[in-house]
Image (tube, rainbow, N blue to C red):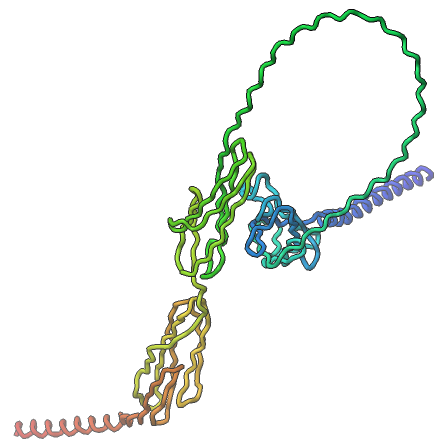
Length: 418
């Protein structure tokens, strides 16, 4: 019996160990998703990167200006300009060597959040929607002068106390024996070094940019090129702008060897059309377009068919609606009979589009009716419906005629037989 009790105790201990292991596994299974969720929540979203041109009152912003991106008043990224009129650079290095962009990110940023841009403390005219992981070329413009940054004063160093030197004991000099000087050798003439010859100033014009490429009459167009002195000495260079093949403007720049500078031109055209641009061998174009006209509608071709109907019949009324503007819009056609609104129909038309609108109206009273849709008018008339045919009467007449004809035929046949 003691043996059986001991065996039962061993079995019960094994069951308890297995149960403890199962409970630990269940707890770990419940905690693992929570830990994974916390790990996922701790990872910030990818930034939205920006680069582009930067103008204040139509002129390039100088280097050293700080561009700050804010969402709901909270700064979410900043960058300092390294080139006049540009912030950041793209993958091709079009805005300066190396890829450097304005990265906008934050743990609380969601796609669709509105990003505001500030140059120093002045807000730019443009905003943009935050999109995780996107790279956007956004040209920024600012109205008004930028504040001049106040230099931070450097702290004056505290003077360090100087130790007082101790007096040095003077020793009595020992007399030096006098030697007979040897004759001095005549020095050989030294060769004069030749002057270093540097290559003359030479210039390369690159990176033509035209922004914006499509404008309205009277709107400013900014044309920029990058000029680099590839020679060995400082020199001046004149950049010539041609518009549609004719000289338009020129600008001179002086550059040290190996340095670069941005030359900008500002154009305003009032005539609609396409314009070709050439700057020292580089070519491009921009277009001047009229602002699109808003949607406007006209009515034509009022048709009433038939113009005369019997009481109870339907009258078909149609008209053509045309959008004479450039933008899409909606129009509601209102049918009035005798000055009262009886039906409406709404149509959606793109700029320059047309569509036919149809109404079907029953009228029973016998009289004339006036019709109006917009500024178009017409009329139709309802008459009495003609009396209906009495088919039983027609059948009776036909039957009587048949009977009479049969009797006549029978009498004639009988007379012939007699």
